[in-house]
Image (tube, rainbow over all chains, first blue to last red; front, side, top):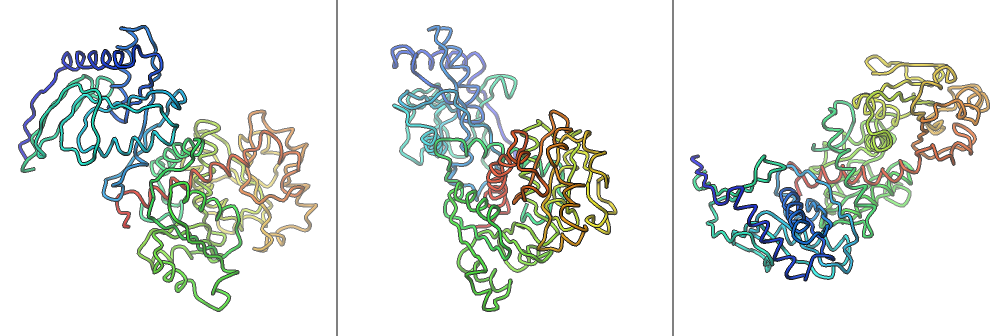
Length: 181
Length: 306
């Protein structure tokens, strides 16, 4: 039961990564005028908001930010503990606009698979890209990120924990060894 | 939650959990594609031994909006006319692959019995004059969406309380969520024993009328002997019908509800029925979302075996 915990990114590292993600999104889209950011609950939502804030600072563009709950689109509902639903709300019609899905950790890819289904029920985006703070590997589906804050090779026995200021008090990324627990 | 058989004994947290879920499903039903894949592969069976249109359709719509398949059992066209028992019908539908059963029956306790016989979740879709839990949840949802909360609301339930499962389940849900409930009916249409009911009782509609935030009208249940509770229908209308003059004396922010089907000109005047202050169609719309919430809780949560 001894779970060790190591800091991978502190609040400053996360801030720099968010700034770089914002710059990359702006660069790829030649500005960000048409982009819609959609954060996946729970920690993708404040992450998307932080990226939008950075884009506003750098480009002076207010990017619409939506939130997506994938609880109704999971493929493992009968295997999970109590499911609660969060709000799904995207303030603009995503049809024919590029959407950047935002999540904290990319792991098996199943969350993103569900998010793509959820998103397609809201409209037909021109293109969907994926931004994550941490890519920890171990994909089980053919899904890859377009923007990555940090590539973090992990073993299956480790757990990556992301803290968001709005939810946990401060931004940060930690790794926990849960082998033997 | 393993089954949904009665509102009795449900905590405020249980009810609010379902209302919170239902709020999300209201949004889902508002989308261009009002359907989610959540219950793909699950089969919901509706066993309705009593005539019903809206409740059965509402459950079926809810199941399909969650991508479940639906098995519809209607006694008029089934082996019930050949003498098949409730138990055999339930076991047959289970053997056909039903993962959840919605049971409506004229006998009190029918859904409870089915829950003992089958190993899947059972929803009480109305049993006799006893309980109709999803109606109570959709009504509470409608009130919460309209007023923001039920705390402090004064709800008057008017009419044939004695034969009404809607009243029994509704008053429990409303009072658990903080509303004050007054039952308004002639003594002959009140239950004989209301010990422990969290309600007040009034026999004079006009006296209570100006104090109500919600007027919840019930239908006279002729099929359960409701007409024996008063001397004549005009007499009932005169004392307990929500006619235009009573409607004019309601508080300006008060709303009117009815579980349907309504008898225009009896418990509700046609003008009131079509007024923008009645939430009757909101109740119908919210009913689908409320039933989606219940199906989701029973089929996609811990303890749900499928």
